[in-house]
Amino acid sequence: MPPLAPGVWLARGGTHNSLVIEMADHLVIFEPPLFEERSEAVIAAAKESIPGKPIRHIVLSHFHDDHLGGVRTYAAEGAIVVVHSSASDYVRAVLGKRHAVEPDRLELVRRDGRHIEPAVIFVEDGITLTDGTREIKLYHVPNLHTSGMLVGYVPDARVLFTADLVSDTFPLIPPLASSVYDLIEKNGLSVEMIACAHGNAMPYAQLAYALGKSSKRTDTAEIQALEQRLIDGIKAKDVKQIMSCYSDDLFAYDVVPPRQYVGAAAFQKPWQGFLGMFEGPINVDVNDLIINSDGEIAYSCGVQHVTGTTNEGKPFDSTFRITDVYRKRHGKWVIVQEHISLPPDVARW
Ligand SMILES: [Zn+2]
Image (cartoon, protein in one colour):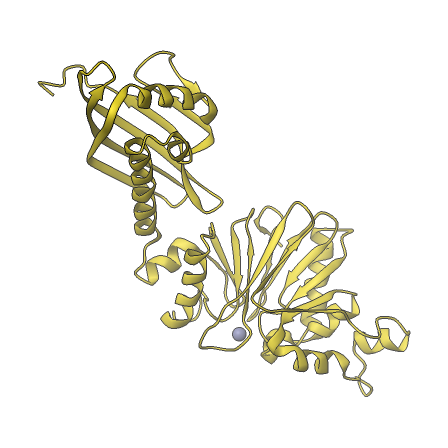
C-alpha cells in the first residue's frame, strides 16, 4: 500500500477505495465499501503497513449500500462508526441485525458476548477527530447525489477524501464537483490531493481546472487582496495590519542597513520608522504588479510610487521595486520573502 502523503494511504480496490489515516496511537479509516471480504482485505493491508495500531474510527461517507456494506466488519474490530445523523436509523439497523444463517464477524463477536452494541458517532454539520497532534476534519456537504454526505480532510497532509462527488474515472458532473470545490474555497482548505472513493487520487488543481475555476486564478486574486491589505496598512499607518501580511519566518532585504531582516518581529522596526517619517497622509501607487503561482508557492514583482510630506515639511517622492515570495500556510497566502530596492537613477529609469 503506497502512501499518498505522510501517514495517509489510499487503499485502492477494483471499484471502491478506502482512506487509511495514521494517528498517534490508532488508525482512522474512511469508508467501508462493498462487503466483509473487502473490509478484511483493507484491515489486513492497514495492519501490515502500520502495525500495532487499532482502528478507532470507521467513517462512512454516506449511507448507500455499496459504500457501507463492510461496516459491520469494522464494528467487530471495535471501531467507532462515524456517520451523518440523517442516516442514524438505517446505520443502527444495519449494525443491529443478526446474521444467524451465515454468521459474519460481528455476529461471531456477539456470540462471544463482546461488542454487543457498536459505538456510533452521529455528525451534524461537521466534526474534528484528533489525537492532539493530527486532525481529521469531517464536513457535511449538501449535494444533489445523496443526503448526509461527509467529506474528510487531513490538513497536515493536505488530502481531502470524497465519495461520488468527484472521481477521476467517472465523467465530471459539475454540480456535484462544484460542491467539493465550494467546500474547499469557502473554508480556505489547503488541499493538494483529492482521494476519491472510486478511481484514484487527483490533484486539486486538476479539479479546479476541469471546472474552469483554475486554482491559479483564485491564487492571483488572493495575493492581490493580500498586497492591497499591505498597501492599505501603509496608508493607514497601521503597522499591525502590515505585519499580518508576513509569515513569522520572513526573510527581507530592505533598502537601508542592516543587510537583511530575519523574522517578521525584526522587520517591524524599520516599518515603524518608515511610517513615523511622515506628517499627514502617505500615498502609494502600485504599478506593473505581476503575480505567478503554482498553488503552493507564489511570487510577485511590482513598482510602488510613494509620496507624502515628511515631519520636516519636505516632500517625499520615491519609487521602490518590490519582489515578494509567498507560501500558502493554513490555507492563506503570506509573504515569506521580501526584497525592496531603489532604482539607481529614477529620473532616467
Ligand atoms: Zn459510489
